[in-house]
Length: 134
Length: 134
DNA sequence: CTCCATTGCTACGTTTTCAGTAGCGTTAGA
DNA sequence: TCTAACGCTACTGAAAACGTAGCAATGGAG
Image (cartoon, rainbow over all chains, first blue to last red; front, top):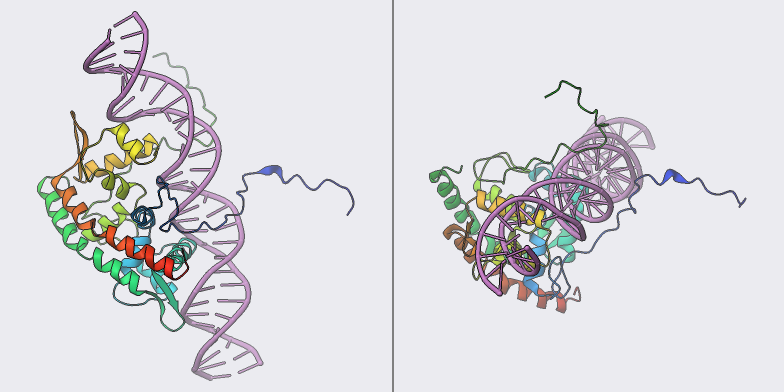
């Protein structure tokens, strides 16, 4: 190569190419907690935007990527794909060629635990209404 | 005031001064769902970074702002304050002059619902270990 | 075969959110 | 008065999410 300096590129604002970060999992330090306790990993995982919603939308059966995207109100595909990767990586979801994305046994156990939240949310709504905060 | 024109300010990249956005609540449209269903508001609320963690840290009693900040592993005060505002606004937290921040009755009911997640997280950890995904 | 629709997904520029640090106004005690 | 802790705000830079466009692969229909 001729020893010309390469074009300086102006060093604009180009972020370092966006490497995928692995999902939070038990046994590893997570945001705000270095202990590796499983419940901290869970809090980190389901405290991420869209994670809970995705599980919720899959509660009654598998959905394709695009169906899931629509069910989530038009979530952008890049974020959806990132979250699906997190959930597959942590064993909560799997991708079946025929049906699309669906929960594993473990994932179903988790959403069963979360099911009573619907009832709580209803009480929450009534309470806020009563107290004028709605 | 003297009627001098004000300094033009250059109009750089100054974001519109950061107005606080109200917390997701039942009866209002939330991210990815316009129905206003309570459970959707809940999913939006606890799907925000630090919300679950804050509730978790308050599970066994009230904490002051600074104690809570430390318990959350050094969360930045601006974000902590924003989340506390969300949680007060939605009736899950209250601020007592003497003791600091603590959960309301409603908040305690929610965290009681979430308590079994600890057990699930333990099973999750074992399962990932078995399947080599740890 | 070509045409067309659908699927899963990547690229990329813009906007929103979060992080990290400094520091202010107040209250209380020594 | 000095010091310390309190709750919190301001500001800058980094990370995450958004929105849109579009690509490679698959599977019919004609």
